[in-house]
Image 1 (cartoon, rainbow, N blue to C red):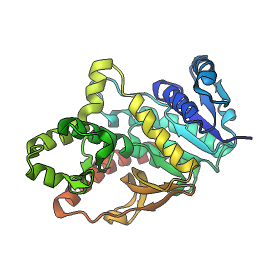
Image 2 (image 1 turned 90 degrees about the vertical axis):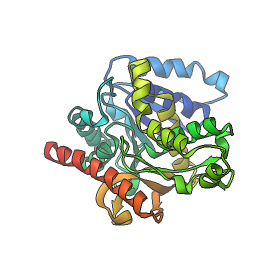
Image 3 (image 1 turned 60 degrees about the vertical axis):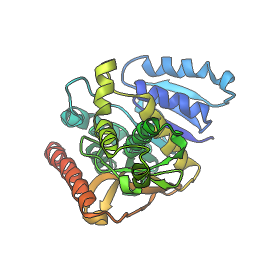
Length: 314
């Protein structure tokens, strides 16, 4: 049997992940959704594109969580997406109920899988799912840093007039309005961003505007579409799936469980992680300067506040 990837939640993100997974030929896909017919319809639609995509994989749609049995990878997008005027944290109570059902099913049918959580509030839902499934922390991670970093790289490259492929950066902290862009460690084709500012290729004010924008651009997209982003979160989740299945050992920022790294314990938060066949194989600790550390701790405290609410509910 080939590699099995189960996507719990066949909404906009789940459906897009299924399509990108087929394009990259990563494995057989099972789409699961409680909404009758949605997963089946999307699976059939994507299946019809397989001959065009030159991909000989099986895409299945179902309402039954039993179908996730023995998956290598599970991506969880189930839950209520953000709507206009909502913060990610507003979703905690509703989506915690979803995590309980999903977590129990994973524990029962596929306890050896690598699980990527996309449901918001991201860091807290990742914590909850790990707690419910009992899967090792290395095999339950949250997708946020890849997306936040990608948004930052895009807007920075656009402002500079350079290729997005030349920008290297990392965004840390919780997936929310306090995320931390590591400007000191941002380079453009190896040239530090600080040097770009000195060379007058971009102003410090413009860089600060971009940082502000990536904290709120999830909300910006909601105001345009009435629903949260899905193409970029899906692409980000697929990068993580590929890293795991192909043992790429890339350093990518994702929500991982800290046991004292960065001076933080017992919480999931966005940090650079080596992602490979053994899951989150290593957390990379960057030496943060005083102001960066302060921003990071502020972000951790925001996650902590929501976690307290979740702990009472769970």
